[in-house]
Length: 467
Image (spheres, rainbow, N blue to C red):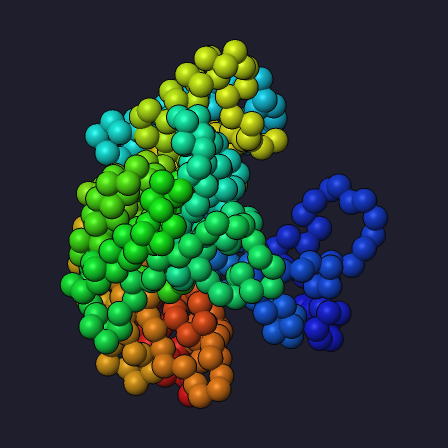
């Protein structure tokens, strides 16, 4: 890293932010030692850091002054591009007006305004009527799981305590989320997790669906595994099924045609709540407001985060279908109780997050970014599938403005090739996302056709440079 000291932990983080802040508690070196980085190969990073000091529109600025084309919308979240003036100014004005307000027994106007705006754009033709605010996708998932369990108890079916997730599913990093999640590395070191959880099989069928464009033809029958699980445990014991309509973090697994519809049918048959985790797919990623719109399947609860504030201020939320909130209110009224749901967060509906959320929704609407994503989807599909002829590529999957490019793993070194491609792309000026040997691309929705071509060309170059 340019301007750094010798190597490894002695390196100093410099660049555009050096000396920027007036407040200093003590004169300590700004090196790489103290920060334990999440989901990161820390040893490799500290040997060769990748540091960002700025961002605008479609590009990051690295600490050595290079422009890095953002091929991942940050971390699936900066859907409107970086440094948007309307969002920045909304947050600046809000922090000067009201920096924090308690969410327990008190609130502030923007919380209700944002909730109303979200319900106004919610999918399902008026199917949803309430929003519960959290601070991340992980918290939104845990909130949705708790709402589902408490809902059944409120309606007199407290025996419904089982939760069903899916193999290769990612639902954040709370204990609830990793319990219903199905990514092995996220689970294996944390003990038994929640009891009473089962998993559907994943929908990845490479032999039948390899290089499918859009939704694959084969795999709807995998939803029938829910019938088997119901038979095994008794459907009357199952509270909810949670899936990502399109699984992102596991390497972009697009649902087979008819699969989500079949899940909905089985859940309806047995009175099970269906939860869609739309933390990635919400707010335009698939060319519609939500994946629910894209697939024409309406769940009972939807978790969102990331694009709700364009990644500017952390926020998550749960959309609740009509009848769920009313059930809680009726039970509390009948029992003579006060608080209807004993759950929430210190920063639920934080004023800065609400301001960022409202401004973000305005940007999406004013610039027609969901429609823009839909218009570019055919171009995106053809561009990413042009990589199918590369000798390292064994599959390409896509939908909307998201793609997964799966690489052939090296013998006895899974993930090594993917990490090298990620590193080569960074050095050439492109940010990608890696999950083992799968590259994910999901650019901000402001991307142009020329930038799509540039991303694919730079990805091919990074592949060529990797043995």
